[in-house]
Image 1 (cartoon, rainbow, N blue to C red):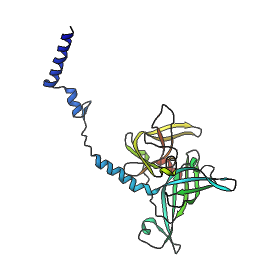
Image 2: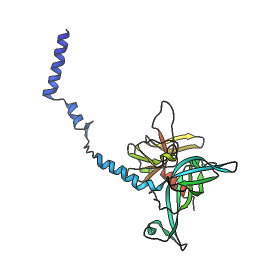
Image 3: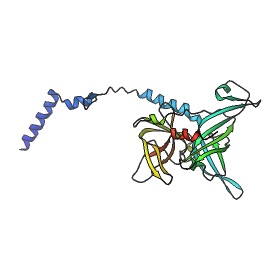
Image 4: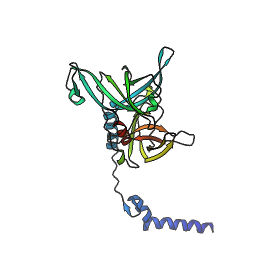
Amino acid sequence: MKKNKILVGLIIIFMFMFTGCSVLTEKTNNEIYNKTYDVNLDVLSFQDAVVAVSEKCSKGTIGVSNYVYQGYALVKNATGSGFIYEGYAVLASGNIVSLEDSKERNDVAKYTYRAITNYHVIQKAKVVKAYFGEGYREATAEVLAYDSTKDLAAIEFSTTLYLGVLELGDSDNVKQGQFAVAIGSPEGYNFFNTLTLGVVSYPNRTIVDEYGENLFIQTDVAINPGNSGGPLLSITGEVIGVNTMKLVDDDIDLMGFSIPINVVKEFLKKIK
């Protein structure tokens, strides 16, 4: 009986080899449910696209520092991330020109920028400062507006550094499965401007919390404390969300959430 079973098995194997198998052929040709997908992967081109996002958006991504007083001393209480959404240049004469027009000038006195971050990053701060990387002094920032129910805040600061302005996308066009990139400072400024890559897990996830019902973009992009307020970017470098939180548990991994950029745009309309 055992020999018969072995013989039958060998016959089946030879039948597959010489007569072919439609299932195997379909998998080879990427034919799924009678649909054929032409898959043409160019890994280096994809890598170049990710590098381009970094080059385009890193300079417009900042650190945001929350300072409080301990006695008479001003101490750093917490750090987060943020990104610049607009700015202008102030000339030595006092005139104001656009960032684009300032590129070829040598009489720029300072640049003034406005940036988005999370409300919980600046919450209870006595002083808020913008951080640009090691070797640069932090610039004191003014809180222009905030919305604790949406976890959003806008700040303004000035510096002599020319920084980038990030392009705001359209979160209504975000689709499940599309690539997403996060830039920020996980676990503080020792890891300033860290880039992580993943996909959109769910584009319009509703979560109910103490502030009510809010909409988020769910991703598997690695975000950690310190990433809060930083940009979630499309593979073309447009901001599609603001990283705000993640689910943390021994049994949970890679469940991060970002505030859709269209929600941010509505918030910005309230700022003069």
